[in-house]
Length: 331
Image 1 (spheres, helix red, strand yellow):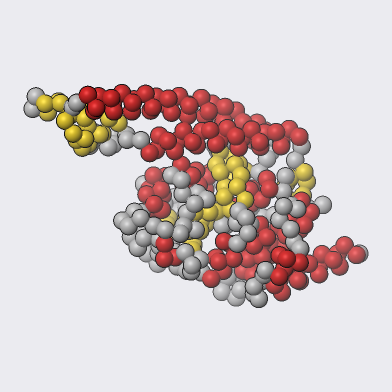
Image 2 (cartoon, rainbow, N blue to C red; image 1 turned 90 degrees about the vertical axis):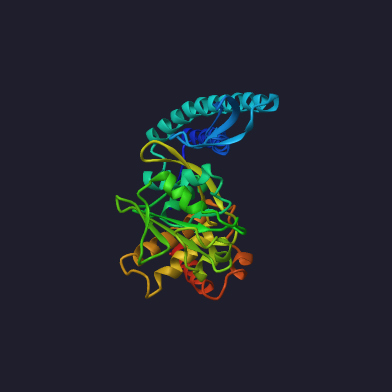
């Protein structure tokens, strides 16, 4: 058996966790789109509505004070208070579910990766412009299988994200702004422009399929290089699950269709340019994940239609895996 099904209690906690996270992140997103603060300010005997931009009290005028400006300030304060109350209430419930999650030994995510992915979600980047494509996707595949996947490698000291956006706004730096919001010490690796590192040497790599590279504005950072194999990870249906990090916080993972992810791993395991220390892990991840899909993920069929959709680079790998399973099952 590759997948050990979750208990009823584990499944219940996972369902509640996802629901509570959605309420909390909705409030976080709403607050993120609101001004830092609005105030009435007196300047040379005249009143203005001012937007405060940051904690240093930098700001800008929004125009002379008027009845309309007063109504705007009143609405802002009311809306902000409502969203803050909703955020704080939902956070308390979310924290309780996170504690139960850890007590039940459900699959966890590295805390450093969780902070980055969570900030991407708060900024509405996750699932729309970025997905998780590296080993950090593994906890989501456990949840998709509704059980613990045995012996699948899941340790990682970095965070791999893929750009999936289809449009960009000129002058915007969504990736760089997101990373800097998590940790101001992130800098670009001058030898690898697609990689950022912080003061603790934690690495974040941004990857992209050739078909999507043109939708990243040229001033954003890190700037990925186009990789043909990233096209495969755009296929199928993404997984989308909330998990808990090792520090007890929640994070949402949006990751590629597990079939395409697994086959890409098998392909990478055969590439001579791949780090030889990583190839054995790629092979185990790809093989074990395909076995788990066959056992516990009927929502991702491994049928003739899927096989016909595979490109020439992946089709032989799928056939080899399928034949190995048939031989194993006959023994």
